[in-house]
Image (cartoon, rainbow, N blue to C red):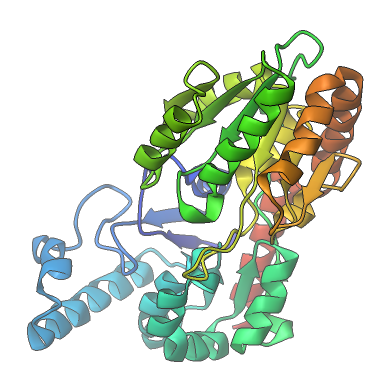
Length: 372
C-alpha cells in the first residue's frame, strides 16, 4: 500500500470538489494537509504550530519570515516521516514549489498536479518561473489535466517523460438525467464569475437568443469579481425576466440545475493576464447529466466536447451572435439536443470516468513512490 500526503491550499472551497473526490478515493491511503501552499494544518485540523498562522503576515519581514518558514518546513517534514508517507501529491504548481525543499530534505518523492492558472497566469509564471525549472527536475511526475496543458508544460521546460495526462473525472451515476423534452428552453452557465469564464460574453450571446426565442431563460450559478458587472449588464440589456443569478450553491443544487436545463454553455477564453482553463469539471458534469454543450474551442474544453456530436465548439474569438447560433439550434430542436446529450454521456463514460481517472492517479503515485 502506497501512503500519500495530499497537499492543497484550501479545504472546503466550493469550486474544488474534484480535490475532495480525489481525497475520498485515496482515503484508505492518504492524509490531507491544508492551510497554504506550504501546509499549516494537519489532517486533524490542528496547526503544526500557532506561530505558523502568522506566516502570511510576516513574510514582509524577510529574516523572520524565513525563520518561521524553515521551522514549518521542518515540522511538516517530520510529520511526513512519522506517518511513513511514501509520496506527496501537491495540488497546484506553487504548492509543488513550496513542498519541493521539504520533499528533497526528507527523501520523499513529489508529484505536482497542475490545474490551470498555475500554468497560464502571467503573474504566477513570472513569480515561479525559476522555481518551476527546479521542480520540473525534482518531481517524480507532473500531472496535466488537458492535452493542451501537456504541450504548455513542455513549453515551460518540463520533460515529456515526467508528464502524465490525467484529467479530472466525474461519476455519471451521481447525476440525474436531464429531461430535455420536458424542460423549458433554459441555458445553464456554471462557473466562477471571472474573466477566463467570460460570463459577460455569455450574457451578451444569450441576449441574441432571446431575440429569436422570447421564452428562453438563462440560469447562472457561481459568484466572483464580475458578479456586479454581470448583473448590471443584464439590466442594460433588459434581461431581468430572463436571467436568474443563483450565486454559489452546493454541489447538490448544481446537479438539480443540470437536470432542469436544456443546454450547458461555457464560452471560456484566455484573459488579458494569460489565465486559462484546465479542463472545467462543470462541463464534464453537464455531459454526465445528458446535456448538450456549447463552448469555446479552448484548452481542455476541446477534450471534453466532441464537436457536432456531444455539442458545439465555437471559435474562442467569435462574436456573441456566433455563440448564439448553436444555442438557438439546440433550444429549437429537443431531438437534436437529446441525441447530443446521449453522445456526451457515452464520451464521459469512456474518457472521463471518475473511477478510471482516480485509479490512474493512484497508479501514477504508486509508480512515483517505487521509482524514487
